[in-house]
Length: 77
Image (cartoon, rainbow, N blue to C red; front, side, top):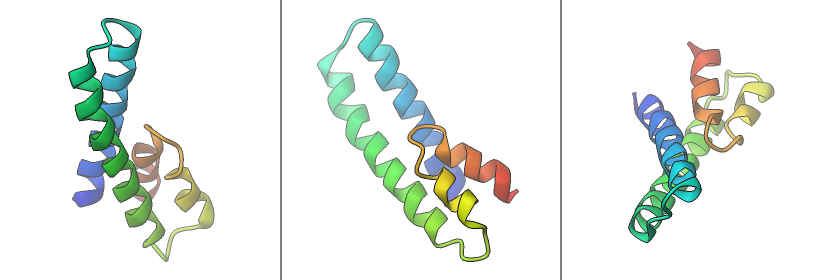
């Protein structure tokens, strides 16, 4: 459950950052979503590396920023 939440937070926060950058570039959005995305990314990577029974390819997918967590969820379910 934690992995699922972190993966989707990672994806949504990166999408928000990119949309903000391409449109209005509000500093408040950047300063809020940047750390949220970074924390979610680290949580996804750490939780994926703890999956000992998964192949290395699945664990390496977590290193892709933004969609890595969602790709890992697809492979482990």
